Image (cartoon, rainbow over all chains, first blue to last red; front, side, top):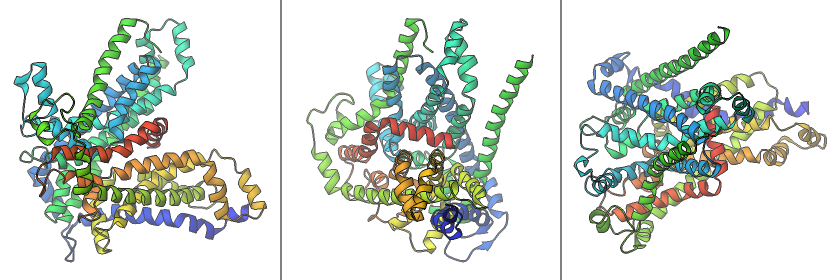
Length: 300
Length: 278
């Protein structure tokens, strides 16, 4: 047994294909964007080092600032309406009958397995000004005065984009929160019930504290999902009207593949990674402090 | 824990029912519209069934607008991505969980890190690299990229399952003179079948729905995959054929939806397990 498991050749052969692929397509490009972000390059002619020029250009570009805030706004919206809302929905869902739980869960999950391309196309027609589902619905309910050119109106375009992403990913957070709740032993609730706790008590003092780790994952997934919004914008508005709905990823795509400024696009990527790290750190901090509060509360 | 008051339960059911309805109805609307004539979609009522069921939308989309070709392209990319990823990740997972070598823990950390990285962030260097290798516009570039980004998750799924498999059978096999290949493919793979099923579902959803890499790496029309073909459907020389477009959308969604309908428990398990590993 030892002979087989400690054979260097075997280990190399087993690891090589996966690690080569992983290094070539994940680790090497990750290092490469940092190098590229200091270069002026269109990928064809030899690159020249320009040091921080890309970053300076980026931070003085008002379009980038706008795109950046749009992405951060989407990120915040996703955290509120996906992560927090799905946890609330999951807790309440668990209080219903088994059959209803299954039906509702399935309904929320279906969009998740579909391609974002299909979903964006579908919502493009839902928002269609002349025959879209949304305007048709408003007309039937008697709110015809609210009818709108949803994706062209500067007031509604960004919200419309945000809704698509949230509609798509809601099931993901719900599923995680739901399976998190299901993994809490039933006996905790039975004990609480004997002590006379009602639903709100159990949700507040049993479910939520035990759901902390799951909630953290929900927050992280929604936040990164919102921050990296791209296909919806690309298909539905192309960044328009003007550059109102342009997100960071859309900005990066345009700089790289429309303007051939690969160096600048790499700088965008580096800035975005940096932002992601800050957001992840904030989320971790948020959950850690809550834990400390808990401990303090217990000792008192 | 159940809520005791019945009327609150009913209220929650109604509110959530309406909520879930908004989640499903647009998809139902897409399905119904795929049988409507374009003129009827644009002028008729948004609600209600088609006046004339136009099945020709599907044949138009499949053959005249060549959705069938893109469908096959997608099948090819997805199949090879699944095969490649599963084989290499099972091999890596075996080396990481069973074999004894110095760097294994470090490699494990690096691979875990790969899960956190959103794939589209490195699209520029990958595009430049593949262009230098002259692989742009060939399906192999898409297969390799998607596979590479799925290795991390698949390896973790396989290795966490492998840890729960007792090593006695492998020891017995070695006594009988079995080699490493026999051990992995004859003993390990049958034992970790549930993990492999999860990996396949996960990779299928990721590669079938892949958008940004398919958009950038496959520039030509010949090897285009479904999500990108769909995007160009409503714009082009044929004019706007919304009925056909809805049909094409249904065709694109049919495999994921069938997967979800028939294996809903496995899909739910895979998606939540995949997320928890993060």
